[in-house]
Length: 286
Image (cartoon, rainbow, N blue to C red; front, top):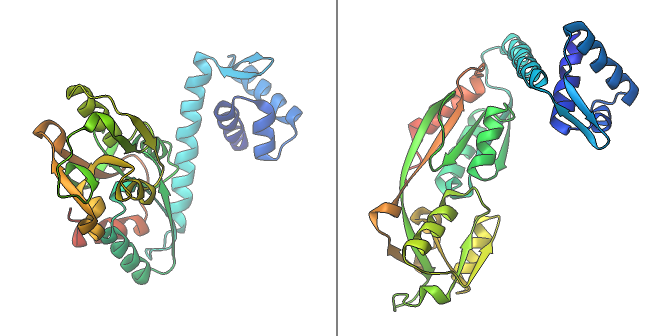
């Protein structure tokens, strides 16, 4: 097996189509097919079941891909460590849920960039499940993830506690007819959407309408205009608290945790270590 075969098998498994993998890797499709057949002959296994619309990994194929990913990760870590001269530089990819992207976090990020200008920072916004998968697939260095999740194989670098509240447009009258209002939520996978759904179910309420948004700015605009209510950590309105009314929820729904995590089996760069060090020194206090 050649090292380039590793990327071929991983990409075919990822895309489910030999043609897509060939295009992504800039190989001829016939070359990709031949390389897979060669591997199958070498290891005396069938890696993929072929169908008119694509390929599906066999059980042995899944095992092969797992090993291939481990080998590629080791090689990537080897290259990174050999090029690491002790000074923070290179890429730093951080995943973050919308609710954690506070002004305090941005201040910390700005301070980090001033201290280490040779580091190229990428921020990836997504729901907690998507960010968790990106961490586990080693697509990003670390991520802020909210809610409960399986921490197996992960290292928690930082943890933030917050309280969750019902938030509406600024008003002197407490909301009464919750069954008649709309609710602004993030896409499925967001823990606060789940809390909203559980809250409505427990209160025997049915939301008039669910307004799904992808950014915190859009969500707060919906609430501020009076179009909808939302259930979110209070910190999301810190900068504009005078424009909203905040109501407490029962203890069952009121507490939440956001953690910054990374995979614990990968090489950790000085760029990443310095970020975590600054994060723990400055703290994103909710």
